[in-house]
Amino acid sequence: MTQLTINIPQGSLSFNFTPDGAKQLQQEISNLMQSLKASATRDPNSGSRPQPQKSMEYRYTGEIFLEIFCNPNIYPSPFAAKILLTMRDERIRITTEVELTQLVDDLNSYLERV
Image (cartoon, rainbow, N blue to C red; front, side, top):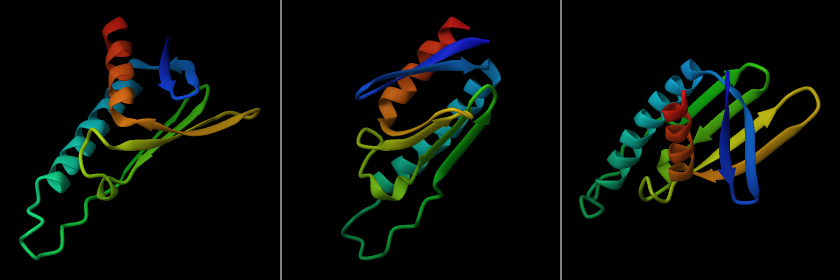
């Protein structure tokens, strides 16, 4: 198992993560990007209400519990999107916001190493 490092505004979080978990997260992020793009490309002058997009909820359980959540309906584009990240074990719990683009970069770096 290799460590995934996620850069956050106040520093970074590193934890053991599996390549399969990373690939599943990458797929979830890909689906989220499609939802964000669908929200961003709607015509604001059409007069119709935008079609609500499904939120992304990803959970990983290993040495730690990792939960990643994003509601694509509140961001104007994938570049503005942030995710809510919760990482915990029996001793500590950390919850923070991370820019989606930063998470994508960190995940791609991890997958290049494994």
